[in-house]
Image (cartoon, rainbow, N blue to C red):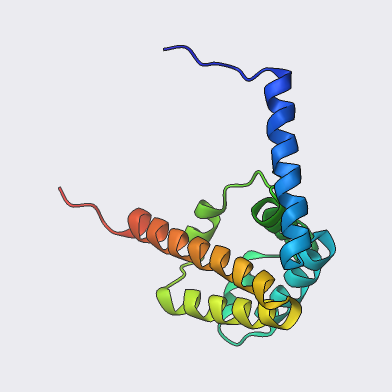
Length: 150
């Protein structure tokens, strides 16, 4: 089986489709780069101050600004399809020792922040993505940390 490399025209067409989808999302649910920055800064501001999550993330993140920039790229990639994020978040989150109650707390703060900053449709969109991400991380963490039999 041979791999087919997309032509420049195909890559440009895909980029144009992503751009159109992002523009539609910005217009219909109120999500743009500036609002993503507000979301990330406000949400992680709450994480840093949180009695439970603050110490967990504080041990792992020495300098918050680069992390916040990376999270802006992550959410821009998720919400606006910019493809700016190229990290591998699963190994990092596995090393944090997160448990189900941590994900619930994380989601609670995320939901609160999204509702504070976005119109209902925008908040619902972002919360849906965050819930999917949390489920995926929980499954990945369980898969990679549960001792294998045999």
